[in-house]
Length: 272
Ligand SMILES: C[S@@+](CC[C@H](N)C(=O)[O-])C[C@H]1O[C@@H](n2cnc3c(N)ncnc32)[C@H](O)[C@@H]1O
Figure 1 (cartoon, rainbow, N blue to C red):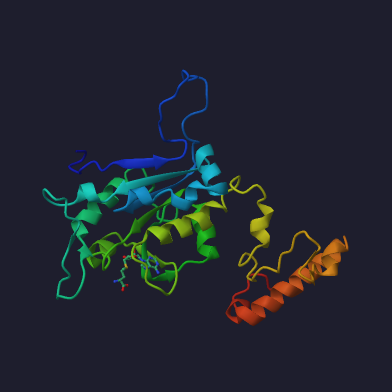
Figure 2: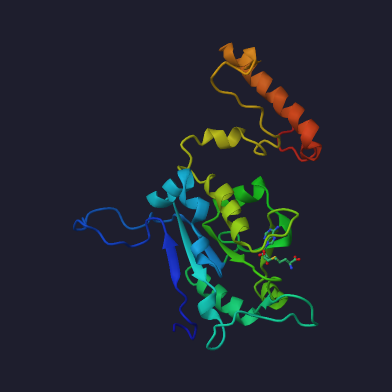
């Protein structure tokens, strides 16, 4: 116990994790994690769900390199009584169970221990279908912060009092209901972490892709030049970079107008 709180197992992924080595440790080697690395803390009943897909490809490589850090905080040890109950029946009746305010509060208190109080520097977010829809602008905001604390709900959700007490922002992955917040957390972390400098091999690609300039991305092609009777548009093989840029811009606008006209009203680039 610390500060009267149960010490839930804080599991870490990436370079901060400790493992046995067959060779003696070089005392001059780099520290176990990169100072100031962006850090996600996830409060969840299912810590084994992490890092999940975040452990693969570019996000996984960046995690191994210490460019970002992932900690899970298991909600279960904060549960009440012999059975560590984390939930109870909904006040007023109805189906399902609700995560208890006191249990979630104890986990949050552990999560904020080494975090800045300024929510801009470290937002605290409850994944929730009732929340503000997640978007690229939010991913950019979060990537510019020092890290984030994400609370994954389960069952019917979380007792409202703890959300109000902590003034937690609710963020949704979309207009559908998932069984728990873990998949939403992974999707949002993925979108955020790839914006951290050094995570993608080619950072410029994030500036051109869908949503960054308020448009959907133009169509992409690669070899072979002809496939099943379909050719790559000749302009893309012309070597004329000015014409290629013009074509891509026109295609991006065409697709956005056709599929997401709502985005055109929100453009950040007023030049077009
Ligand atoms: C079954 S859901 C609870 C749904 C809740 N009773 C409602 O109707 O709004 C359980 C948990 O999954 C997560 N979840 C479900 N849908 C989500 C979404 N669209 N975006 C983010 N999290 C979601 C939340 O953490 C939520 O507490």
